[in-house]
Image (cartoon, rainbow, N blue to C red; front, top):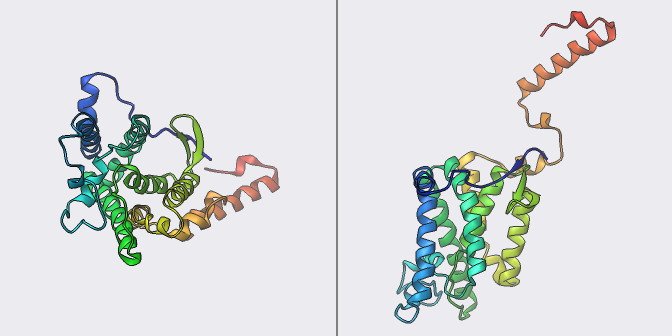
Length: 254
């Protein structure tokens, strides 16, 4: 499956490493800082802050139209361990995504994943006239970013949390299934808005095709060559075969 991919920042320790991280990945670092600030603020000041002004409530979002963008920074009902695992995963994949897409597109990717995730659940509540609980936490936006990152490492071997070896394809499938099962049958389909956005956004930015991802899975690398490259490879192989058949390797010239 190729060389293992460790999605992580490899900078040195200390304040200098933090500064380098902000310079290389300003959007990722800012999101991480806001997540930590939001978690600590609501942990220590939960009784003084009205969380409904920040969490996305499907039946009330017209009164608080900013909440599709602010709910990822509200993690008051999440355990500290689960929150740290999400941050750690984002710390791994964020710099790689931002390096490939650029800081501006990274903002669009994170914001779009957040808004489409909230929009899908809001649409579900409107269509079926059900009272939906407030949407908070980083889980759904991170799922969209994970799908986007997996497209860049579709066939590479990823060391998940530095331990579990999986391919980008398997990780993308597992992420999608987890999101779907976490929100139920029909509701789970509407919760996949951010996942779908992450997939389509990277496909649009890079020109990837769905067929190109699935058709080459498990096939030789030559299937991804252009027609001219295939012709040159065929001609080189033909020359090597002639030399081999003649039992005179000195005839072959690089």
